[in-house]
Figure 1: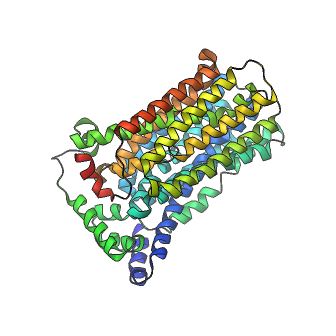
Figure 2: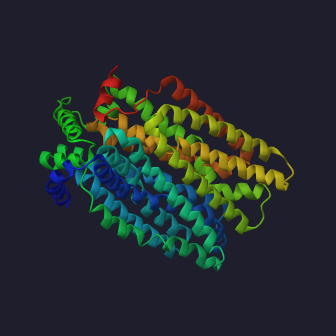
Length: 475
C-alpha cells in the first residue's frame, strides 16, 4: 500500500511543482492531520476514566486502590507497545503502524464497553494501550519527517491539538451521558470509541509514506516524489532529499545495533541528545497535570462541589481551556521558538499549582474557595498547554538522528508514560500520605526544576532542518 501512495505522488508531483507555496504546505498539513487524528482516540480513552470512574466504582463496587490502578494502568501497559513502536515503524513503515494502532484502539473500546469485572476492564485497558502506544510514538515521527522546516512546529503540534480534542470529547461524553442508568452510562461512553478507528485507518491508507522511511528502504524515486509535494519549493525538496540520502548512506559503527548505539555505546553527541530526550519527557509528566486531568472530580469534591453534574461540567471547562491554549503552540512555536514557550509554560504551571495548593490548604469550603480552586486548575492546564503540553515530543523527534529517530522517540515516550503511570497510579495514595495540597506543592517544585533545566541547558531548534541537528549537538 505504501508504494501506491508514493507512486500517486510521483504522477501528481509535476503539476504541484508549478503551483504556488500554499497547496504544497496544505498537502503536508493534510498528511500530518490524518496521522495526528489517531491521537484523538488516545486522549478520549485516557481521560474518559476521569468521569467514568464515578459510575464504574458504583456499578462494579471497586475500591479506591482499584480505581487508582485502573485509571493509571494504561500508562504502564503502554511501555510494551512504546518500546516496540520504533521497531514496528521501521519494519511496517510509519503508515502501516498507524493502521495497526487503530485496530487495537477499536478492539480496546469494544472490550471496555462489554467488561463485567475488574479483571476484564484491566485486560481491555491493556489492548487499548497497545494502540495508544503505537500512535503516540509513530505519529510525531511521521509528522516531523513529512513537514518542511518552515512549518514543522505547526504540523508537529497538531498531534497535541488532537489529543486535547479527544480529552475534551471524553469530558463532554462524561457530562452528556451522566444521566443514564449507572450500569449503562460508562459502557455507552466507551462504546462511542468503537467506530472512529475504522474510519481513521481508511484515512491513513490515503497518506503517502514518510520520505525518510522510503529512502531507508532504497525507494529514492518515491521519497523524492513525496518531498516535492511536501516542501515549500522544488529547490527545498531537492535539498531535503540530498540531506536524507546523505544521512541514510552515512557509515555506521560496525555491528552496532540501534539500541546499542543509543543506550549502551552512545557517542558524545548521542549522549547529549539523550539527556534532553529523557529530561524533557520525564519533567513533562512530573508536573502532575495528568493527575489533574484524571482526578479533577475528586479535587473539586474536596473544594466543596457536591453534585456530579457540576463536577463533570467543571471538567468540560478543563477540556475547553486545554484545547484552546494548545493552539498557541501551533501559532507561535515556529515564530518564537521552542525555548521561550517552554520557559513561559513552566513558570506559569509552577505559579498556578502553588496557588491551587494554597487554596486547598484552606480548611473551610466556600463559594469563593471553590471558584478559586477551579480557576487555578484552569490556569495550570492553560499554562501547561502553551508549551510543555506538546513541545517535548516535537523536540524529541527533531533532535534525534535519523538512524536512531524511531527508537529515540520510543525511549522518550517510555520515560514519559512510566512517569505518568507513577503519578496517576499514586495520586490518591500520595494525597492520603502528604495531603492533596502537599501533592500540588510537590508538582509545583517539579515545574520550577523544568524552568531551570530549559533555561540552563536547552538549545533552540527553530527553523533548522532535521539533518542540521547533528551539527548543533556535535558541538
